[in-house]
Structures are given as structure tokens and as C-alpha cells.
Length: 384
Length: 171
Image (cartoon, rainbow over all chains, first blue to last red; front, side, top):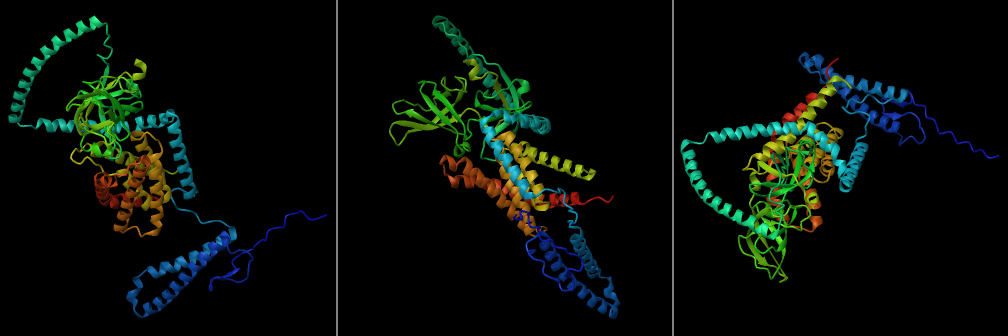
């Protein structure tokens, strides 16, 4: 009958007498102990002990000198070194006897940093994948942010608005008079155009009646919101506003400011929403020319962001494009409501392939200075 | 958990939120700058460098999550990058003598460079767009400078605060 019993592992008994503290070496050979944790610890400690021994030798030398020159006695460094030396020895003996590590004084104990790195990296990767697959994964994070960060942002933002109001109030009387005059002139001309518009509206109604068209996009319900924070880097052009699901905001709602399209709501939390502006590098808008109704693709780009421009592409070569013609959101867009003004053409050229034209438009919105925006509380999906 | 650890936790959390609000609400409002220093990165770096890998990683992870929740469609992207920065700055802590100001600032700039390089690769090179010169001058350089200045101003006080917090009060 062969012996299936496991060979007992070699037991090592180490105690105070097993190694020579003065030489820093083991008195006898202990088998395959070289790479064990104990051995490494002892090796490190004995090296330390050797250093400390040298230090204490220096100390005795020092104290011998100190007896001759009593003033040197004040220096306390060698004394602590000697104390440290004896402490090290006692720690080694304690460790060898009880196989206990000395107490760790760090803030977060019992965690290996490498393990934590792998765990958190895995969490990040899982979140990246999940947020690509399912949007609901954002919900708890948005809720937490609404409670913790957004109130602070709102507070800071209102302080900023108050300050800029105060600065505004410092304008001189002269400037105000000038502004008043300008505004009066503007009112005059606006009144003129208003009467003209009124006539045109009557005409439109008459024609609509005639053609039985229902003007379904004439009036959208809108909600106003403040911009509370902007991405600080230049890589993204997204910002957050202080209205969220509590105010009826949902994903894919269109955002306007000063009469033009700003962007689209990409995420919503209870007290805030994230908006991607149309000048963002990731943004694509399906648009059409107001005069020719020709469709094109508008996209933002990091290089054009600085000049506050957008790029349009894929307009067939036989279409006449005129400078300053307006671009509106198109009726084929899946997310943008049709007929919203985006901007005006500033330049265009024929592409190298001789088949398509491309160019740039200037948005009506000044993206560098956005403070308040309007959100249309209607999405394209529900209106279909 | 003892009382002083709870205190340290609260102070650190307040610092992170403060840095985020300063970075995104206050600095990005200053119109003539248009850029803001990456304070969260500075904070992550200083914590990793002055405390330990673990603290650096935790701060990096949570401040990255903040950035993701507010400005990124992918949750976990900034968190991963900041996590690595926190970990590596914790390693540097054991390699360099930490009271010197020049080495931490150099390492901070390296961390910022890493962050921008990852952004560039993930969002641009993968879409086959390589206008590196433009990005370098108009996107990275101003933020580099601002982050460097922020590091210069913040390193001493924040690391002093961290060392102060690490002291265990006598029972």
C-alpha cells in the first residue's frame, strides 16, 4: 500500500537565537526559506539593524567625544538612532515569534492598492460598456449629483448673476442715454416691420385656409433655464442647465436661445440636464436651406468652434447656394423639430469630387456667452 | 471608524465638490479666458502624491465620475483616466522626495499631458482625424498653462492640509 499521505511541509522554527544580530546573518541553514515572506522581512530588518549598529557605534564615538566637550551633549539625533536600533531588534524578535506584522499606520488599511486599482478599473470598464448599452445606468449617478453638486452650482451661479447685474448697474448715465436713443430708434423700425408682419400673417392665414394646411409647428411650449456649468476643457462643448426631469425635461428636447437652435438635451437628472451644443465635435444636425429646401448635413468641429462656425456638407453640385441664405432644421431629422433657425451661410465651395458642395454657416446663437436658454417641451418622436 | 477619519472624509469630499464647481461654474464663466484649469486633476494628483496610491485612486475615481455625469455621454471614461493618474502619482510619492516643488509640478504637467493624449486618441484619432498641431496650440496649451499655475498655487497649501489631516490626534 503506497503512502498517499501528503509529505509534511518542512517546518521552520525561528526564534531569537536563530540568527546572529551582531553579524546580521542566520546561524544555521533553514532549507528553502530564501523567498518566503518571513525571510524577506528578516533580511530587510537585519540590514536595518546593521545600519543602526553602525549608527550606535557612531553614537558611542560621539559620547566619548562629548565627555571631553560637554557642549555637544545637546544634540539628540544619535540618541534616537540608538533607541530606533533597539526597537528594530525587538520588532524582529516579536515578528519571528508571533508571525505578526507590525501595525500599519496608513489611512486606509487592509487594502492592497493594486487590487483596488484592478477593481475600480473593472468598475469603470463595466460602466463604460453598460452606459453604451443601457441609458438607465446613469439614473443613480444623476440623482446623486442633483442632491450633492447641483445646489452648490445653482448658488454659485446666482451669485455670479447678481454680480454681473451689479456691474451692469455701474454703467454711466451717458451710455444709458445713448442706449435709450438707440432703443427708441429700434422700436420705431420694429413697429414698422411688425405692421408688415401682421399683414403677412393675415395673408398666411388666408392661404393656409385655402390649402387646408395645419400649421403644427407655429407654437411650441417652452421652458426657460439658466446655464449653470460648462465643461471647462475644450474637447467637448456640453453644458448643464438648472432644469431637469422635475420640470418635465426629457432627452432629445431641442434647446433654443436668441431665436436660434443651441443644441439638444442628451441627459436629464432630477434637477439638471446636460445639453450638447450644435458646435460640439460630436454633433450632427440634418438641415435644409430656407430658400431652396435642399437638404444637407451640419456638423460641429473642434477647429471651427473657436470661430463660432458650423460646417455643412453633402449638398449636390447643381444646387444654387446663395450667401446669407438661412438654414433651418429639416423635416427628415430624427431628433430636431423642423423649421428651427440655425444660422446663415458665410462661405461655400465645390468639393474636389465635383459632385457635392460644402461650406460654413454662422449660427445665430453666440455660444461663447450663453446664460439663459429655452427648451421646447416637445420631442420629435412624440410629435410624429 | 474614528471621529478624525470622518472629519478627514468630509473635508476631502468638500474639496472635491468645491474644485468641480470652481472649475465648471466659476472659471468657465470668465469670458476672456474661455479655458479653465483642470482643478480636479490637480487635486487628484496632489492627493495621490502627498498621501498614497489608495487615496489618489479614490479621489480620481469620484472626481472622474463627476465629470462623466455632467459632461460626457460615456460614464466611466474620465473616472478611468483619473483613476490611473491617482494611482501613478501615488507611485511617484515613493520615488521622489515630496517637499520639493519642481518635481511635483513636472509630474503634474505629465499627468495633464496624459489626460489630453487619451482624449485626443479616444475622441479624434479613432475617428481618423489628426489635426494635432491645432489641438496642441489651441486646446491643450492654454489649459496646460492654467493647470500648471493652479498646481503652483495649490500644491503647498493642499499638501500641507493633507499632512495636517494625516496626523492622528492624541487620545
